[in-house]
Image (cartoon, rainbow, N blue to C red; front, side):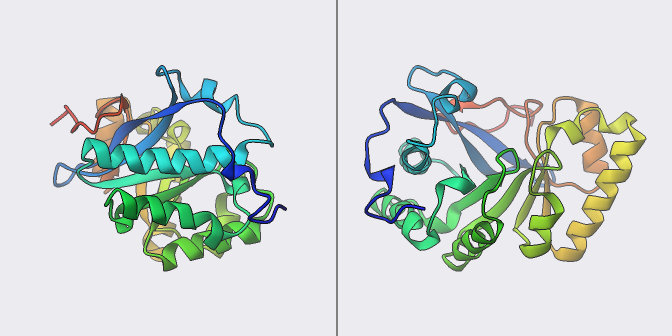
Length: 244
């Protein structure tokens, strides 16, 4: 584990990135709850191509560069609501130290840090579970909202939820796809939704593509949703969904 002086986040990334924004909508009051920042290449290349260039030598720089780019771009385009940023759990070695540049950037561009949500994805295997819990707690202490992304798809799951209860839990799109006609998915969804109600965690459904998926989730009491059904990500734009 590097010290702050040894951390490669102080070095140039070596390639350019931009941010696309996809809205997270409140379907009850037809408002934009937040925009998720999604990394793209300098010429609009997809996230997969960009992340494919991340390795053990540049992971710290990449994570910090994404945070700074997301906040600076959000401020420049006049993001109307919250900003949701994905972070890489294995690119953090000290929560306070790694958060300092985020706070500095938000202050510099006059973007209220209380409007920032930090999401950790389940797709990356967490090497230090205890550190991730500490990271989440530190973010909350500084006034950031927290979220577990892609819940049910990857590594963290219930073990992380048992140790830390985020503000938001984002259901993975594989769980959402055709949920309206899949009794197994319905049963699993009902269980997760019940647990989140008991723990006072807001469920956010992502990856919604059809009116049937949307209608089922709305009828089930889900207010926050995200997906192509509402709007696709747009490069360096913070547009409102077209569905309403």
